[in-house]
Amino acid sequence: MVTDMNRDINIPPINKALYVKVRSGFVAQDTTLSAWCKNKGINPSNAKACLMGNWDGPKAKELRQQIVEASGLSITQDNGHQGAA
Image: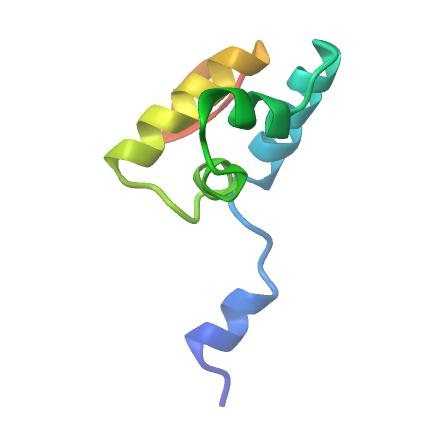
């Protein structure tokens, strides 16, 4: 019997594409997501978690918006989920 937990292990994170696009946006500005986080005093693990959708509370959504804007991307709404345009 396959449990929900076992099935979730093989499913890619919902917002992995957003994480990759954001990292690319920072690279296009000759910097990195990690450097931006260090400059802002943000733990890079928290930044990644909010972009990947593993952390999705109010603070995560606020941080996600800040990161996406700093990366040069814009946010659009799609059925209540945020993503890169």
